[in-house]
Length: 289
Ligand code: NAP
Image (cartoon, rainbow, N blue to C red; front, side):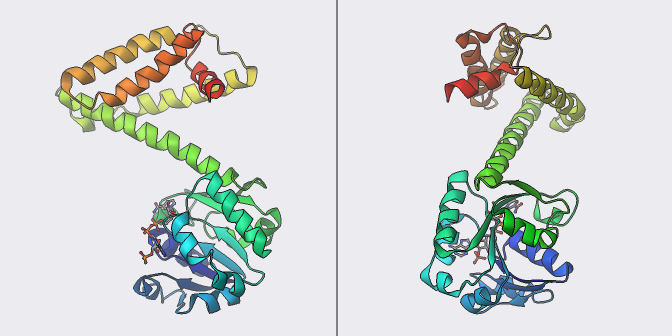
């Protein structure tokens, strides 16, 4: 059992604190607004003095709004003086570049550093529905793997390149946010034609299943580097997208959303890929960045 300090007692930090305590660790929790740390007193010691709590910890878990907030708390001379040989696990969401800067700071102090990303709502922490990626110090991951299982039973070490965890997080969230935007817009489109949005969601299996099948097909095509096929050409998809743009414009339901999607597909066709299958978008995006 470890001495763990959690920095940040917001929605996520509170869930992480409870999960660590359930596992039997000695947990201290510090929060800028002390009431939130005190609200966890049934499971963790609210730390009044951040730096003495830092000096006592084997493992420091950080979960605050963003890296700018971290900067105010931990990228300070007082923190640097207090931290001993603890491992820092940065669970604040950020970009790969944030992770690299943070690792450089930790290395300058000789501190073991893991950048991490949690794919779960707080109520899923510690359940099979939580996925947590870690990258950076493999030695730090190995040393604390059992403790980190408090958050997710199967923690994923994504590699020693410290940006890997946040890269996977951003990529998965991009697919999630884009997918949610599209299906909620689609529900509003149905409503404009007198079909309740809830009735549209009864067809969830139709669009979720199509994405699932397309992801499998895309994987095979990426492996083969061959995007040809006889299912449905990008030319045909662009014609379908045009209908969605017209429907949105006619009903006044945020036409910018389908216009932007249509444009990306159109650009891929304009690059000479109109006869290829839909996953050729990947090849187009990859080669133009
Ligand atoms: P939250 O409930 O809004 O909590 C934010 C925390 O950050 C609070 O402890 C807050 O302290 C602290 N904070 C903000 N600015 C600060 C500053 N300048 N100095 C010191 N402390 C500061 O947010 P959350 O949902 O817990 O999210 C925390 C992290 O987890 C974020 O990076 C988020 O992206 C990530 N995450 C959240 C979820 C989720 O579903 N909630 C899922 C995955 C990842 P005060 O209480 O004093 O304001």
